[in-house]
Image (cartoon, rainbow, N blue to C red; front, side, top):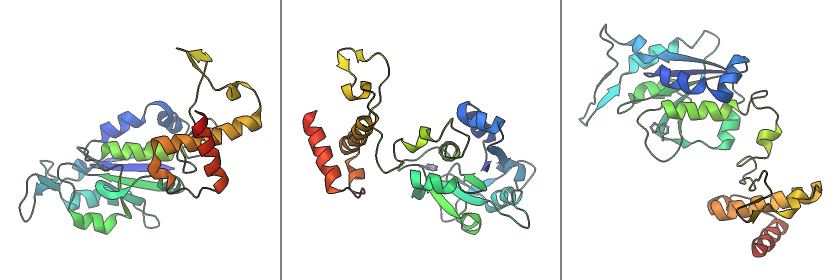
Length: 243
Ligand code: ADE
């Protein structure tokens, strides 16, 4: 899968994604990353890409042409990338959106800075506006990295095996059950007996119930969205009582 990032700070994005799992996925050729520096498409020789706001207001806004010309370098006659503008005004990223994006061939992400980007170019070229949460960052680069990181790990071959993501938090609308490694007793806290039993059916049952309780305790808002059966509720209630 190809990712392109249109940004004033290409090094920030490349530096982050060159590390660790995304870096290895690029080395293996499973994903590719290219960046387009908006300043390379400045409207004058001094690298001007922004101007003051019509109607007043503080700060500077990135102009249409530098963004449009940057984006055009990613388009061919036959194909345009699926184009996302990252901003705090977008729909909030979640695991479902991450999975949807992992099925695209080429995703381009446009990062704003300062006061953002002239709305007309966003309206003309973007398929979607996405936020990574209800808070404001200094620019879209971190958001672009978050999207690329979370989408990449859904692509075959990026993680060592599919189990690495099928059983984890948010994949089925639940948080993952608490996890433990050696030693089995630490600071007087014991790993639940069932996890040491080797009984796969019991462990599966335990993990599902513990995931329900984890979600209930840490993200009660997520419980409302789950279509829980009467049996699931009974399990969770009995489990919670036994703690
Ligand atoms: N740019 C600034 N804040 C942002 C956010 N919360 N999500 C995505 N892009 C942003």
